[in-house]
Length: 246
Image (cartoon, rainbow, N blue to C red; front, side, top):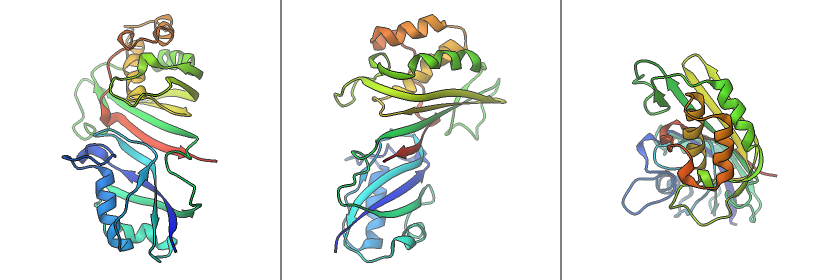
């Protein structure tokens, strides 16, 4: 009897060229399919909730796939530990209805972005933060973030090359907090355009460093033109924290 499994996956994306399987580069999807095949005894084709880019990390990526094996669902996380590399971990597993799909059933996602500021770069954080020499003003960035709450056309923060999609997305909550040299952004929304979070962070840092005013940030959003926004923040500071469903 075929079952539909939902797994929550955490991974360090440093060694991979993103989540989605590629012809000439190692991906998270490829490793999951090839390694988990050993547990279930047949080829797998998994669907992921988010196609994270090269170097991007996840605390709560969700995958779904049909299986015909009889391994008890409660044993899957521990059994997966025996076949997966140490930078990919199954943190939860459950059986779901056949109609449930990791991507299409998702209602919203939460992304985090982290940066480190200091006179000297931290070699131990190089794969997990965007490293800056100057500390951006968290209060100024928090104030600017309020402009993106609600439904907006995010064309100004959309990178070329992504799938054609409606540029309107709804952000339910967004914040920025600092703890010493570390700054963490949080974005909760019903969906995100290609590189949207990284482009938002790149522009918000301009606000935090005094290169862009609050009014300028709001005008960038309203302008619906990618040329108005700041640089794309590097991938290693980005984390898919959680995918939410009904």
